[in-house]
Image 1 (cartoon, rainbow, N blue to C red):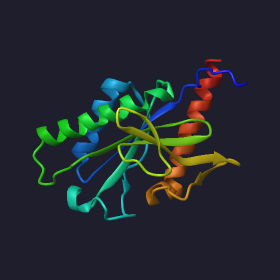
Image 2 (tube, rainbow, N blue to C red):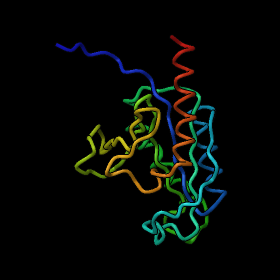
Image 3 (cartoon, rainbow, N blue to C red):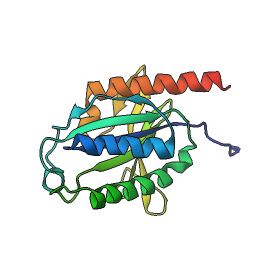
Length: 180
C-alpha cells in the first residue's frame, strides 16, 4: 500500500502574452508583488504559431515567461489560475485598449519531470483540481530534454521555449539541493 506524502515544491511559472509591452510589464509587476521576486524571465517571443487569439487580442502578439524565486506546493495551482483570471480582468478594466482581451495570463509550474499548465477548460487529457480549474501536463522531461505530448500547444513545442524551461528546471533542482 502506498503512503500519502507531501509532494515536493515546484517552481511557479507565468506565461503572459499581449501585443502591448505595457501589459506585459504590468503582468510582471503584479505577479512579483503577489508571488515574490521574478528569478528568471524569458525574452518576449513572437507568438506566431496560431491566429486563434487574434480576434480578441489583436495581431502581433508576444509571449514571455516569468519564473518566481519562491517554490510552492503544486496544490496551489487553482489559486494561481483564479488569481491570474482576476488580474486579466483588472488590467482590461483599467487600461484603454480596443481589444476585448488585451492580456492573457496562463499560470503553471515546473517540476523536475514536467511542466504543468492550469486551464478553465476540460478535455480528455486534463485533470479536474477544484473551483473550475483543470491541470494538464504540457511537457514531460525525460532523457535530458523536454518531450511533447500529442496535445502540447504549438508554441510550447518551440526549442527556444524549451531552453528557457530547462533553465527553470535547473534553478528548481538547485533550490531543492540547497534546502535538503
